[in-house]
Length: 59
Image 1 (tube, rainbow, N blue to C red):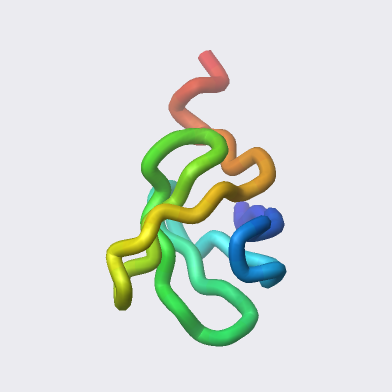
Image 2 (cartoon, helix red, strand yellow):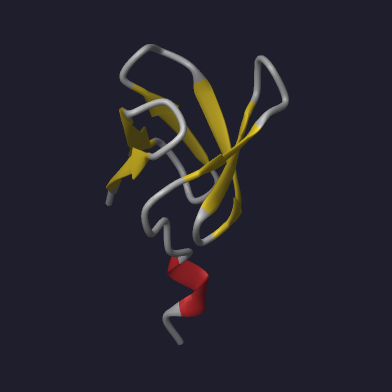
């Protein structure tokens, strides 16, 4: 199941494509670092995002 969340640094919406990878509305790949942080795979910058919960945390 895919999730949508918001990237506060870029002002983009992000769509998850797996548990730890996502793509934003500009086509940039993002990797989940924590529930509220992701790394831009092109620049290596960390971005603050709205809640990107990990499905494995739902025990």
